[in-house]
Amino acid sequence: QVQLVESGGGLVQAGGSLRLSCAASGRTFNPYAMGWFRQVPGKEREFVAARTWSSSRTEYADSVKGRFGIARDNAENTVYLQMNSLKPEDTAVYYCAAAFHNSGSLDRTPVYDLWGQGTQVTVSS
Image 1: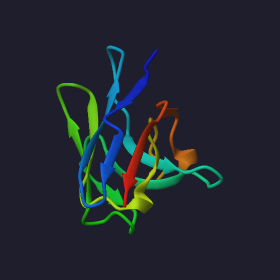
Image 2: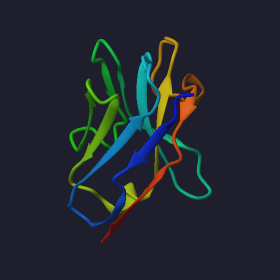
Image 3: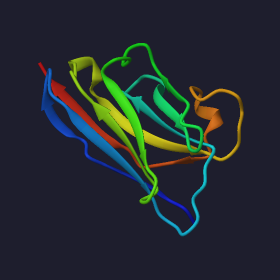
């Protein structure tokens, strides 16, 4: 059974950078898309970034455009979220997710079938 495991979270000062990784276990992994979402206590999980697995179509939340980048390592079944110019409001638990069907959109949580356990990102001011 495929699992997603995130890593790379931590504490960083405002203006700094972090790179999150999401590795898929299992021998066969061929999703339609991979996404990153984040959640703070008391709020709904919100979309951050996503990309299709094969066509390299990407989407970003307006709040992270120009600062975050999503990329894929073809050989390692891993997707990355490069986060630059971090702000305190980026503090959240970050989750990666895999969608195995084309539902048309990439920015809604119901589109995704498989989720990782999350990794904490804390940005200090």
